[in-house]
Length: 210
Length: 210
Image 1 (cartoon, rainbow over the protein chains, first blue to last red):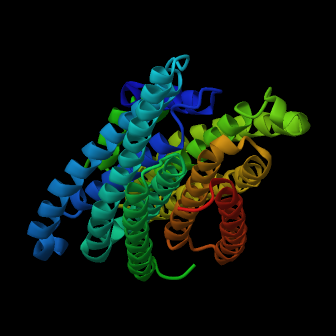
Image 2: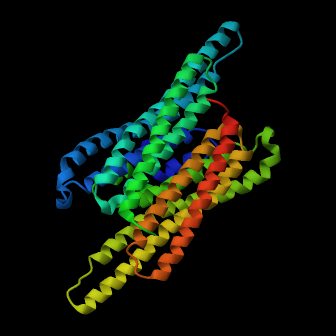
Image 3: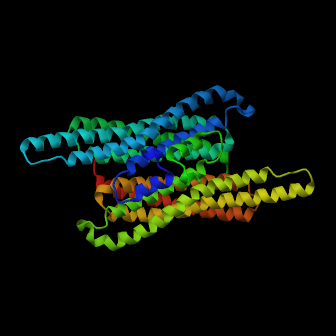
């Protein structure tokens, strides 16, 4: 499992000539770091007298960001598994007509799965971004830059996953699936980009000049 | 060392109530994944007949992105070390006047160091982004989404490091240092944001519709 590799091993594997892990797993990792940093801001807010008013809200946010973080961590591996399944389908025999039909169907099925994994990364990043906004607006101001980095990572994760959705949609023949998925991913990306801007505005107010 | 932790351990440490590692180390990690993905695109281009014309250029880019990746990986730890040094300076005794003066000087010195580490992350991300543009424009088109994710991560890493530069500049009394560093980080961020846009335009042309 990629998540059981050291950071150095993960980076070595990324840089290598093997196409997996690649951008899809990095997008999920980016999302996971964004959710983790949001959790950290919650943890650094909970129990502080100055932030007594938001104690309950931050505790609820933390519960959710920790769940989202764990889901994004599992998606790091799921993306690479889904990519490898597509490659395996391409490797199926294609001598007889029957084999050709079975191979084509397997490629279509695997490519749909490989599209749904980054789409799920996008959905989870969208949820985590809403929490990053709460953390940036109401959390410990000493951690404002961490809330900002959380938002930057969630946006990069979401936009990176969107590229993986798009490149896979290009290989899918089911026009209905392509159209529906395309609408969904565009809507999510727009929300995430807008919310990132709100987070960074809140962070600017905490950090001030310079 | 953070880079010798597993990905899961790193994420657990991030999310915890300890303020380090935090956004600064995540920014360096983001940059490292961006440089690594650029290396991967080079590796998937080198040796391919279709890309024979850019063989030498991609080999040179790869040499450089691998160096930048390694530097960014070391900056993951350096950022956390620099943050801990600031905390240690704040913990110095401050009973006598002499102690107070020594503590203030130590805080200033440590905060300057903690500013220069993310500034270096930004500089390395800027260099890597120029290579991501080459990889996206001339590299293997099957890896277009990976080049795009590389650019997204380098931009997020650079912008995340900028937030860490800014929050530290707020604690520095040396007006000359603040002004000079502020000018430098803003210039780098502008270049990186512009180049990211160029990379994503090149990626769009490779991926096409959807």
